[in-house]
Length: 117
Image (cartoon, rainbow, N blue to C red; front, side, top):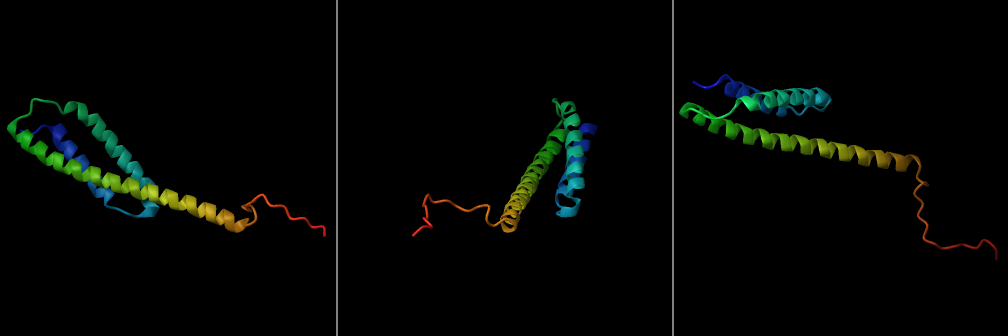
């Protein structure tokens, strides 16, 4: 008999994997909120998953380990995408500002031009 906490852990992890497959940027805030909620559910479940495990639970645990590896990889990719989007937005912000005020970044090389002849 597999404990309910283990099956709930698997269900929450599968939901996380499914949510991380979505790549809609307009829904990103709601997706992040869902991810946070599901990760908090897993944090609550974690203390209840302790030894001793039956043989059936051990084989179920091996499946959970594989699912956990998939989840970790997808979370890393999702975080990388967010970081890339943030850096792109910062670059756009700098380039728009430079376009709006092109004389703000005048470089001074230390030379002096005398206007008198």
